[in-house]
Amino acid sequence: MSQANVPVPLTFKDYKSATKPIWCPGCGDFAVLNAITKALALLKLPLENVALISGIGCSSRIAAYTSVYGFHGVHGRALALASGLKAARRDLTVLVAGGDGDGLSIGGNHFIHACRRNMDLTYIMMDNEVYGMTKGQASPTTAPDWLKSKLTPEGTGIRPFKSAALALASGASFIARGFSGDPNDLARLIVAGIEHKGFSFIQALSVCPTYRPEHAEWKNQVQKIDREATADPLVAIQHIVADDGMSTGILYQRALPNLQPGGREPSAELADFESEFEL
Ligand code: SF4
Image (cartoon, rainbow, N blue to C red):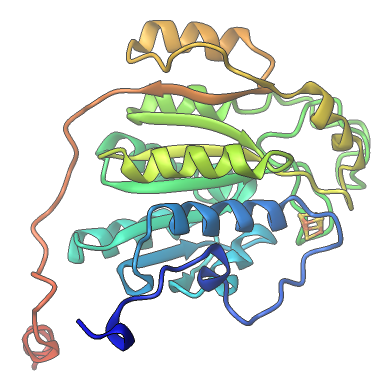
């Protein structure tokens, strides 16, 4: 191979697109974008072998900010889109990204079924406990006594989801929690999630300084888990339910059977696909 043909290693910048994010200054989603691109660079994944599927919301804009294949879907349907893509193109590394409202409210049904199907997807849910794009309504992870929304001035009075517990109960085989304030650790978790064979759920605590400025305190509240990831669901659920939702690391990892419907080989011609739709 001549010197001119030697592949140049990709850096995390190569995984970013030329489109500049329009997130608010200080938004945690910038750090999540950095963590994703860093993870892809660490794994040296070719750009054309990766797809990032997202839903709707501030964080779901992320698909446009990377240079891998992307699809900015409709609200709550990112996991359905990603499952279809993975079924058809098993050779691709498929990442899914979105917010807590997109993933647990509008897309809640897709979330639990994606967990139990255990397809080889890596789902990064940017959790800021608020709907940011629609100007600050309570989401499924908002505390019941949060009083800042005009829609719920006395709080929701509804218990929030513990997304890690929901993922565990629904059959996910990899569950982790990271923090936008520690993008290197979040990148490590994303690498582990991509390497895991099965459905990887990564709750990325991502600050929203515009509507949840009090989350600036998260940097003093998050704590790294100082134990090995457990493969025992009983142990995992005890930890998940007992902690305050601020412990970061791999909460659970287990090898479980995963659904992989028969897909076309990557070399299939477009004509093969089109012929199925001929009238
Ligand atoms: Fe980020 Fe919040 Fe601004 Fe949305 S509203 S871009 S989540 S800081």
